[in-house]
Length: 462
Image (cartoon, rainbow, N blue to C red; front, side, top):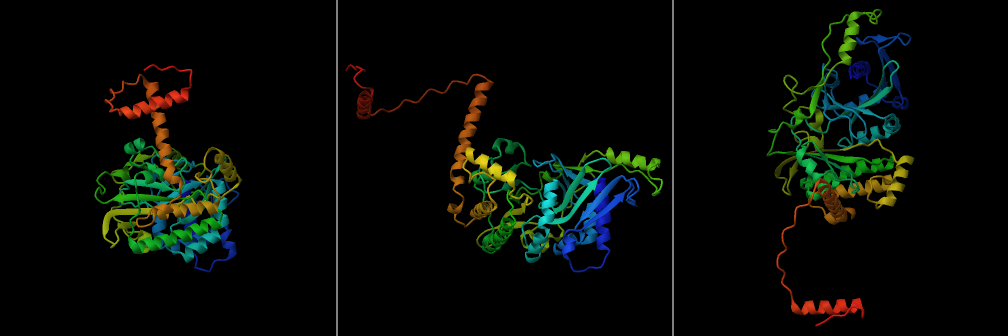
């Protein structure tokens, strides 16, 4: 982490110090390399190093940061301060690690090499889309970097916006894809975990809807359509609409933000900058040890999150209400909740691996209900599901799979519960049945039908 922050500070500062100029095609593929010692001195390539840092397309990301109204000084101050935040439970399902800037505005996310290459391949189209659509809902990329230790693996990472605010608790979180298979988070676990990321079937089962009011509804649907069309055109799938809901009645009384964060802060070691002697310097050795042994501590005390949103997000349509969008009725009246949402995980192309996944999972389930479907179908399904989740829209436009899948999951949960109960011990006796009221004529007809189906081998007596 220390190496990442040092590289960001040097790389961004170098680019920002130069006079602005128009972008060229070469800027989209540019790579700038740096070598550093542990103190942060830049070294010549032939000298032994503590870590190497590579900055990708710095001029492109500089312009993207300008489109997003990021002040260079604030950006560097947020990312390269003396401590950084980590979300408890990292890494995620993808194996990526998430770190937050000290003010919770930015995310440092490690990514796979394949994702790194893919982002570079679509960077020009992404840049043009942001330029034409300043209010885009897509993840906002602020920098793409790589760090390498001696004899160590290369770590690729990206700097992104944090959708969730530093000054508001998020009471419900949903990851919405528009698919049904495997898209249910167990409700009993959700009740015990306020940080659980719920899924599509939870959203449907809880009858959640976006209440946006007529004007915001129209603008939101149009921007969603434009962003989805770009992802379809680039052959991307597996993205989702990350949605956080702040309940105005509950407010921040539960302290949910601080509960899930820890602080990375190396011990303070005084060093002298001696580039030619740093490898032999005892001070440098002490600093290396302090960095390696830095232990995450729970957030608290002097490491407090901001209580107000003073960020650039207020410049954008869907983030201007306390960093999000207020829930509103048909007359734009305030309904007491705030939505924080955006399209995430946009670096997964429909590759051969995804085609195979679609092929094999299509044998086990309805091939239109799984996540791995071709980009055109994925985008159409995603757009239809999100639009059907907006209050005032026709729910019948929702993909048909959601009309049946919840019943299947309920039956599955009942079957699992029955197995668990039988494994844990004897089942308590059922209560005695209530006395039934029998219609004599229906009973007689039933006996006659049974006798006819049984045939002459059964003899009945009257």
